[in-house]
Image 1 (cartoon, rainbow, N blue to C red):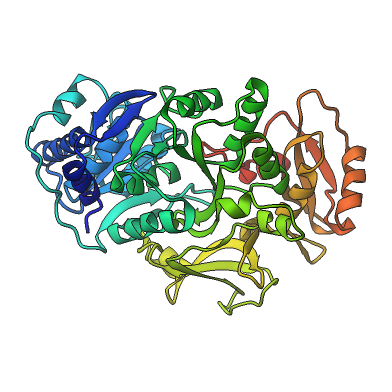
Image 2 (tube, rainbow, N blue to C red):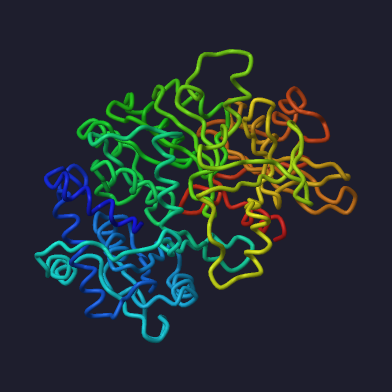
Length: 506
């Protein structure tokens, strides 16, 4: 069940189908794509002794070669360790050492200094003449190495907001289950589609490559190798049928650019969003500006991209009494998983009662790499404890309130930051907001809102205090507002609440 078999099959059945694009420039058809992966796999084996089960890291920016390297590693029967390219080299080196990787691919092959990489780990460039020679050194396409369904394929390291990152072990079967759920629960795929990688390929955006490879669709990396809203609109107009994964902050920037330039999103088929809260006011604005192109998913590294989904027809559905409730949710369970909300003893809670979200099914990870204790804590009787707090409705829609560690307990009462953020985001002068708890001698914690005003707008405490009194219970209102020009975010657009808490402590 080697996931690389999907590329091998696409290359044999659709050899001349366009595969890899840098911007709107075709770089390889499927026959060439597969041949490069096969060639690189032999180089990895011959020059570095890479064998089945060995780990190969990728610490590079988005590029078409990224996909070639991924499939080369699987072609050899080895394991990919994708590393966020925005990490410091010292942080990346820790992941590479912990994963016991034998090779790391970097942009130019000169990212790490002497002694930074573990002994025996070689650094190779993902670009340049040496890479091109390696990718074209063998002219015969050989089948990928055989792999069992439970063999490790993707070793993904969590962001590590509560300590050192943990290595999530995803098997070939996990990746197949995730990918086959996509056309059922998220969005149908055809060979005419173009998967655009504007978010980091080391994470969710990269995981969506598989189903597009299976359908011999196109893969597009913007020339900027990242997210530039104007560039995306231009590529969509040229390439057509473009689908992409985006964090909510990216959608906000696309809406801003569309308003500035008059773009309608022509050529964009689908924008799948997740990775953070998408507030009701924001998705309504996106629909008004760019039309019915949006689909929501909820997942996490431990059950990649696959816990719940809110389909296009529900996101863009007509106004009715329940619409805001549905838009505020993350949808219903995807087809290959079960979802429930539990208390601290793993007892299922009734509809409407908040608790921890748990999921089980074919996408749930094998466990954490070299960390049996963390695995035992996270997987209980086959159920993954996500650490997310939410509740299920009678009709099966899951609404997330917060991460369990983000819940604010003030005066013995739970306050969910997401609920307060939803209210503040609806104010016409608020661009962004994030709510956290601050230690307080009297209340235990108080609610603090970090607020980014819209450009040119004037905001003060009294204005937002009055707004909150109109829309939310008094005990939930922020006790303090911190006005700032921007919120700290990681490379995937998630607000770093840990950094906001540090600011309060400082």
